Image: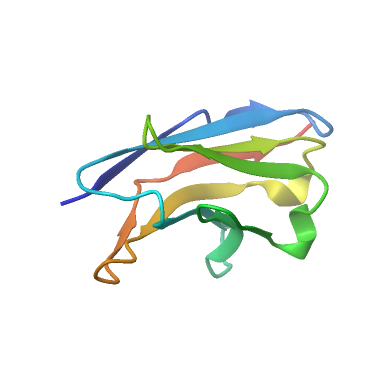
Length: 116
């Protein structure tokens, strides 16, 4: 069983920065896909960024502002969010897809609010 625990959410003014962290426990591999999704009120959950052992992928809306990275020793994935906009306000969820068996896991979510 894999558990994901997020931290680092909060409130920030437009133009500010936040760094989200997601630590995994259980059996995961460096080849598993880890990423971040977000869900704003009344909207569908959407992919923000993902990372494999070599490849990163970003939603168009965050390219150039957000950066995803991972530490395989610590089993942790990070999302550095810069130049935040009010439209980035959402609950951010950590996600892992295990390549070995295709299972997917979600964190509990962390709120990010961008407001003046």
